[in-house]
Length: 354
Image (cartoon, rainbow, N blue to C red; front, side, top):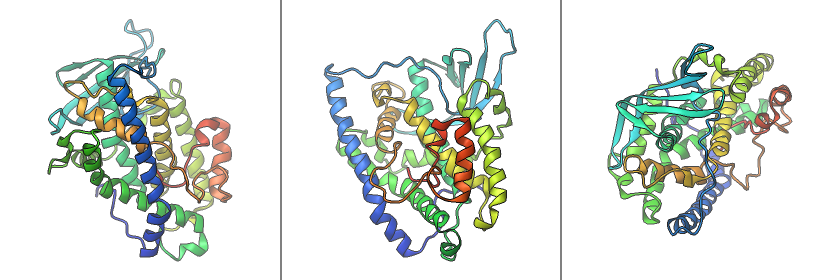
């Protein structure tokens, strides 16, 4: 009846395998990157370094919230509106809040921010970036994780039929557990290290509230995003690759018993590209303003997530990409996708592993 991010059970030895060969490398990634973040923040506060230059160019994200655009030849320009109803955020007292509407206008020709508003509050580009980033990591991205649970099959009998897919399924289930159930336990460390404020440790668990809100809100109907194919290489890629994916899935459906194709597409291609786009779009965590009087607390957490939970995990011994998988389904999809956009195709994962 609704999405759920952490409800699939796996055998004990699969769980042990994940904690042995995935967990330590995931931990080392965020631990190492947050140490670097602390050093950079120390230097930045003392004007010893500057963040990378940022011109707030709008790129490829949040496309499903596209709602409308100005007509051709309109005196206002070629403007697209992205509307977010029931918009979750955390205020600077670390209290979970929900705005009625968050609206962002983007110039499709220049890919530049035009204006934004949350309920009755007019927002500048920096504030808008913090809100969009927090919405991505807290309320939007989790929908992909949750939906992915219907695109897996961890039945041990599948090990003989399609072992690569079963392994990918186990990894997805494990990482959903890490992301939903385990993540909130890291806040105490980040508070002690001065990366986040003590308010994130409130019994109400404001970040978990934002996750639950995003999952419960489900996914909007978004057929109108095809309007953006001429303006977004990401949307253009996804619209074409989705058709490729389902054509190949139909040919190889005997290899994926009990698996929903839409959920598998979301949990592999869409999820991995969402991570890559987050990494490419927010080049420097210092762009997020932790001193903002209204949204600084979200910026704190946003910096931590950017450095520690967005990039690829190093040290994994198993294969995780469509490219080079050696699997007839994944290789067929990759070959066709690479002809559309090789940069995107090269980062398509076969499981949730970040």
